[in-house]
Length: 240
Image 1: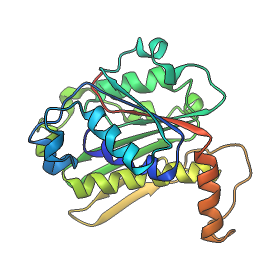
Image 2 (image 1 turned 60 degrees about the vertical axis):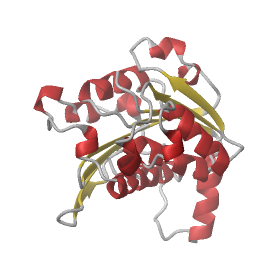
Image 3 (image 1 turned 90 degrees about the horizontal axis):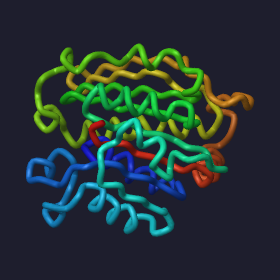
Image 4 (image 1 turned 30 degrees about the horizontal axis):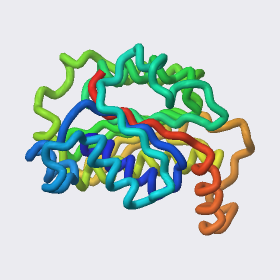
């Protein structure tokens, strides 16, 4: 549960999702405290265990499964959260490596109703979202070889406030999807220069679209809460 993944999980719990699976094989180290939001008492614990404790404290009704392991292609056959179910699956890929993103995407796209990927380097953020992963031909084009990525360690290019912003953008895309509106497919934000660029090209569900001013915000919150209560979410944060 890295900087973005932990924040995503906490916001999902506050949103009211009924079930959540956290996947990571890492433990909390001293360098994780400042940039990932863990507490001193979490040192030495598995990140998924420490995050689960906070989630349950925040919302005791969430059924949280903590998986201390790496995500592999074979995980599609072994993880309960990826098996057929009457509830819709939302996948949040908060991984460090492009190779891991590719494995998560290729393994889950045919099973997920929603997919989001948060990327961050210092104060530069990119959030990609897909409201129909099985037909999405765009996301794969955003993946590249890890050798072409910035070589700095994740803790050296992360800030907690930027991770919180990235998580908020991810959850906003999820909320837009739950309201059956067009989901922004690709958003880039540079906090150092205070610039943002994005596009709303991803297709949402087949239900009719409503303008953002069509309903009072309180009704929108109830719509999101009801829809979220029917979803099961998976936050992939470990290397594949």
